[in-house]
Length: 326
Image (cartoon, rainbow, N blue to C red):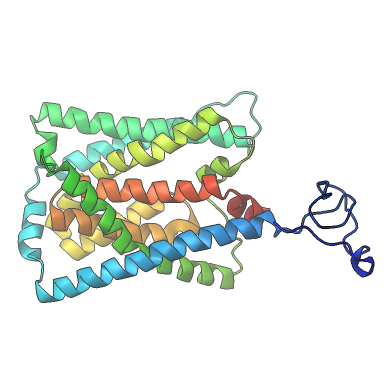
């Protein structure tokens, strides 16, 4: 970073303001007194860093998506066979109802839980609320699915198409599929942002994102949220939405309608208006990834990478959140 040369004509303009850091610039070839260092505002630097990373991912995604589209045109995927395999999964409507009832009851209890000595709207309030609701949602849903598998003697690996010995290949397929979906998700986010801005909706972030970007946030909370976003949430949410709900709804509504319903419920579940469109788009990609590969490991990896990239943005460039939220 180059320092400002304090010529007589511009000394008044670069006069120290309250809060400016003082750096000794002697020996650097600049003026021989303490002056400010000419830097871009931290928020602008952070936004530029995010833009570069997003641009690289967008370009890579366009190349991969273009290749996959050309390949699909030359060799169309066996959609009918893949959808038939999806419908053959052992899950029934009563299974989905049981999981949803358990999760809904847990969410209600968490929302009504008393939080002593915490001011509503504070970071401590949101931290406790997210921790409790996430534990209740993912813990309750995971326990309900496990009980169903035990009571009905269902092999979970076979029920979700997870094959042993294919882990490396399916993980790679999940990463590539995420990159292919990235341009569509980005375009959906941009278009939704333009529409909401035109409607004078103030830009906001999910509470979890704002908590991660808070400079004074506890390291314990940050580690927990990272594990939740990259490990727990992708597994549990993909099991419930793509692993169980998608096959059941496909039998009754058909594949396009089932994908739309599951994706919309998934997006609405997060309860954030600005994230609705990109979450719907990425959920559609998760459904396509599961259907085409037949393995739930693929959308789990896609989901984990999606959350990991977003967390990387927040942790490496927190000013993109804090600056825009002010």
